[in-house]
Length: 207
Image 1: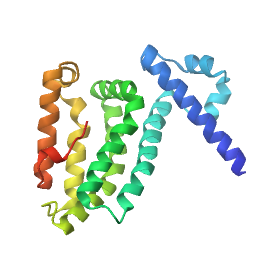
Image 2: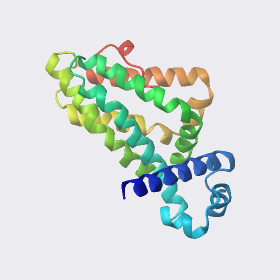
Image 3: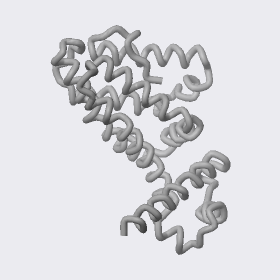
């Protein structure tokens, strides 16, 4: 039973990776289930054994990424030897390193978030998974006197929503394509987060 479950999970991840590649090559709207079938060698019945629709493939792609990153972050959060600021820095560094191999896909998904509100809402829901671990770091920092925060959970929620909402900006494309504006936006967002935590903006890097 365990071996069968692992095989099922491995095939599901393989399908997600194939779909991700097609979404980048052809575009999400232009990629059909038939395209995924052709690239994977699966029959239509085989595909529906794992997913009910193309939308579910994309949703699972985002969820798989989020869950994998959370597993990477847990040891940092649980490390009793690190203070809150050290955890925050490692939290951000791990996030950046984890995202790097999927940089193009993430950029594409951000553009999709801008044009598809249903997809945006789903992405926001996924982001909520990070609120609790982020809040635990902020709460520790407040106890240690490193962060000047009265409400850790609410602060974590607000800050993560601010980052998630970046693709919804009217100027998002400019921020991504114009280096000067990208640097300015990054610095501004880091300053907002730093002020909310009561630390120097030089102590944090989010992108």
